[in-house]
Length: 425
Image 1: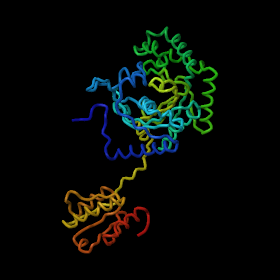
Image 2: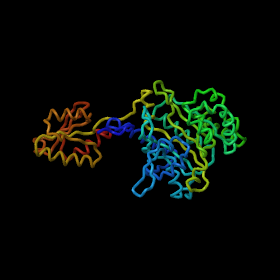
Image 3: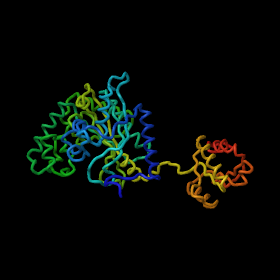
Image 4: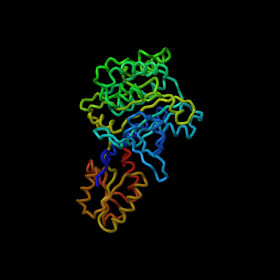
């Protein structure tokens, strides 16, 4: 038996990196006052049809959808925004006194697509959503949080790219211009883009197959269709980034294809050598209409999502070693039946006192037990033998210095806690 295609086992030695990254992301969210939300891994299919969009590749080609025993159509979540907004509406978070509602999530998502490096069928996504404010400073805050996260983990080869999609009127004017521009070339575009041109022309700009078509280079820019309100909003977002000293580039071709996206859209990319052809680490944008589509009151929001797998790939590409300690506080070496019994009691007491402890479970001799302690990078080894049991004592060896002392058995917990805390005996 093997794991299904497009999935992976995260084994000890690697899982510690995931834990470190997730803890760092959680801490950054705490500093920005974003609270964690945990939503179901599966939802009613209609949620994603509404929340992601019927015309998207995700809904049309990539979702894991099935009927449950009650005949209901259920889908494993392909992204986190729709579930977060559904929970926001269902639990009436919009009625809480503290607004905007600032949420973050970390969890597995599922998409049926061709597996490749950094793109799996089950992947872990971290994302945030700020719901209930139209202030441009929230847009800047969301981008700052994302950049902060990457930088604090050590990444340097980063590029923040942003664009404005404008308000509803600006988008409508731009979409009409795109249809007019691409229509003479419709038959030259891929089958997907021929459909997109009728359903959602913005998504033509984001096509990977037609990206080198000459018409792409001359396509009308959204920035030329921004009205005064949209242009002013975009200038304020950029001004807030400037105040924080966050560098960025404006890319008029950066789009979000869903109807409810408006104003700010952004991506963060890795420019690290050897990172791969797909350079995007995360993407996000501002949206209006999504909360209403899911049955809530008129509420604007902004958010982004990042793949933890791609984050770890970027760290590897830049040669960044996470500061993960691979050691054991204490290993108990026990010799003889009475010592074995005492080792069980002592290890339990030490663990209750906060000490990380392991012992032998394979009836190895003393030499084998010391080798096991070495492999586990134990800081201290506590030796229990017949002599120690008779004297109600233990021998303690500092594995770094080689120093070995004998202590009364009832002093070992205090001794180890002091030593591990950096104190003296």
